[in-house]
Length: 234
Image (cartoon, rainbow, N blue to C red; front, side, top):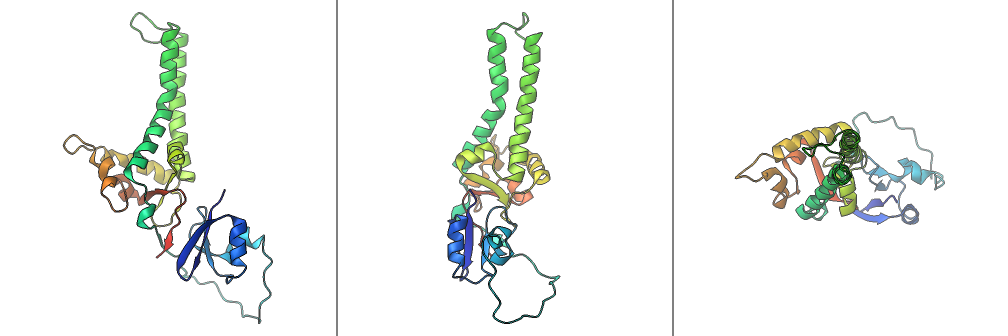
């Protein structure tokens, strides 16, 4: 279900269902800014298709001269309140869930192949056992790409983030960052793995960072926030 927010007197309110939002917009100006996770930025209510399709446009009080589109118009920048950023335990838990999803098929295949003794004298899979093992590895790779690249890039939520109620979004727009940037972010995790006194310091950085970012987040410009957190207008 889409969660909507609106701004009144510079203060965001929400989340609301669309029906609840329409009740409030009935007594607010038509250019009231609204937002949900699929919108690129805070947008006037009269410019959002889901709203205009449900509300008849009011008759203008007086004819207005048509205005030319402004070539210099810039969408409002957004930011998140400090309480919106996901703390390290939530991030660690979502990563653990995502890792378990990837290692699941090979683990099941390993147990299955050895239980049926589809191995050679060294314990390596052979024949049908080897086919099962290779298929499990391919399934693990496909699951990983679907979960950590496609889901993270298009929705901001891998299965692990969905379980923990968090979302990966752009710090500048509050939206998912797309497949290419998610892939870049995954490659940038190499820096998070660099050891400092035998500890991958980048993955621990959210413990004290004000925006709870890893090194990869800082490079790509992403944050992990609570799923229902609404960005504020800067």
